[in-house]
Structure formats: C-alpha cells, structure tokens
Image (cartoon, rainbow, N blue to C red; front, side, top):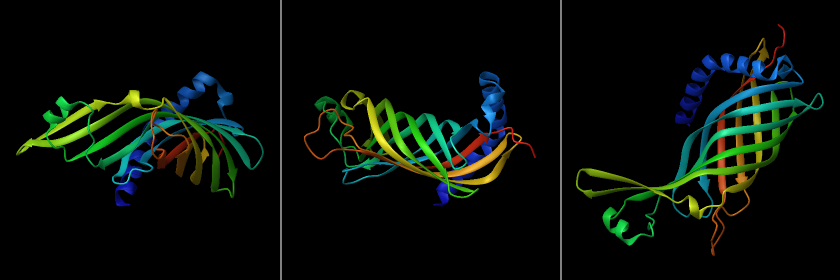
Length: 238
C-alpha cells in the first residue's frame, strides 16, 4: 500500500506540471468547445496491478498506465466517457519456470529461477458515469483492448554471481483482441476551475474471453486493478 501511495504521489506531481500545456493543445486541436462543462477532455495517469486468472502461482505485475478521456454530459447526473488508454501493461510475474519450447534455448538458460509474463495493451473503454454526489462518481461499461506485445522474461544464474535475463517474444500465442467489463470509482479532489482540476480514481477490469489462441485447459483471463489521477480541462469560471 505504501508503494502504491508513493506511485500515485509521483504521478500526480509529474503530471500536474505538464497537464496545462497538454490540455491547451487539446483545445487548440478541437477548439474552445472542447473545454465546456458539457464536453471536455481529461488526461489520466496511474498504475496497473494485473494478474492472469487460473495461474496457480505468481504475483501481480505492476506498471504505469496513461491515456485520454472524453467527457460527454448526458444529463445532470450522467456522463458518457469514451477513453483511449495508450499504455496499459498487464501480465503476471514470478511464475514457475516455463519451457521456451526451444530445447536448445532451455539448455542454454540452465534452470531459470522464475518467469515473468509481460503483456502490453491499448485499452478503449466506453463507460457511463453516474455522479453519486458532487465529489463521488461511479462508472461502468465494456472495454476492448488490443495486444501490442507479449514476452516471457526468464531470469537465471547459469554461473554463480552472474544473472542472465532472456526475453522471448510470445505474441503469436495470444489473441490480438481482449474484451472486458470495467467498473470505476472516482473522487474529485479539486474542482476544474479555469482549467485546473484533479481527481483520484480506482478501477477494476475483468476480461471474459480466453487470451490464448489455443488452450485445451481452463481459460486465462486478464484481471486488472488501476489506481491513479485524472486531470479534467474545463474552462469553468471562479
């Protein structure tokens, strides 16, 4: 939990310094109508804690997420949120050693201590947000994700005192598209006055299709928690 708090604090500190310039760029591209209370953009950044279901042993894989949110007001309580999350790593780490499928490479690696499975996606959620109060809101909806890369990382010590790290591209074994259901809880820390706003969010996404192309056993699904901050750009007067 301490690491999570420090990660969010770092993201908030770094992002807040650049968000005004990026938000101004959005307004330049989309025009002044892209910064009203009825239609505005938010930048978001945070950390992912992911796992793959039915992996009996292993630990959550951590990584950073970053993206853009379009906020479209439907009613006083409801917003439509199309998002584009350009960076969304997933996977699992410290799983029992997997065979590479290449005997010569297995021999070269010796006896790897463990394997990390590293998946990178682009996420496109389409959520409906409901404002419970002025500060709290909940969102839910479907998400489609596109696989960018997939690698297995082997770490071994073939010679005492020397650590060998080997990456093997396994993208061909995975489906290029993943579908998930997402639920999100957001807290408004500061109101978006004159383009300055700051929210905290916690999100959970669960895939519901097997991420492997060929699998005769139990299905493997992505399971991901996200924590971080969003920076809405709304030209709302003092």
